[in-house]
Amino acid sequence: MASIHYPTQRRPRDAFAESPIQTLRRDHDMIRKLADKFFNGHSLDVRHQAAEQLLRAVYTHSRLEESVFYPGVRKIEPNLVAHFEEEHLNVDDMLAVLQDMHLGEARADGLMRDMIEALLAHIREEEEELFPMLELANLDLSAIALEMQMFEANLVHMQARFGKLGVRH
Ligand SMILES: [Fe+2]
Ligand SMILES: [Fe+2]
Image (cartoon, rainbow, N blue to C red; front, side, top):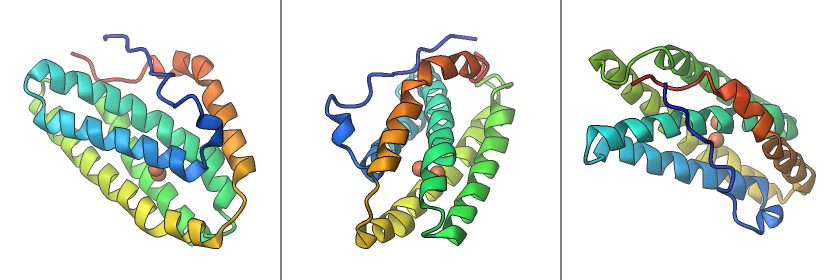
């Protein structure tokens, strides 16, 4: 399995000024970009590389939301957060299967497409249903922002665990 270094420099220098929602939207944009690269990459190599990066990005993004963001906003929108957690489980099930597959297999390609479809629908729901509600509520999310920064600072330690994640060539 190719070892991929997780891009820890993906945040801008003024990331500490970012609201949690801005941070998550940035992750979503990266996920959409990688999904597009997977679907439209000009070579198999490019598509496979995008798939690996996407799996890692989704994994870390989901852990960040589940560990910090969702608990932080759960009391405001408990049903919506519970619904999103269920959607994470669905995507995680597909990730778990994908990590033991060869991307060259037709089955892996189909599963990857299913996973991306579920994922894109999920992040769209977060952006259209949860984020605007939080923004309208005008809450102070600075404590959550700080916790998210700390969580991301631990990525180095988490990388050891992510080592097992990724589709084989
Ligand atoms: Fe999510
Ligand atoms: Fe998200």
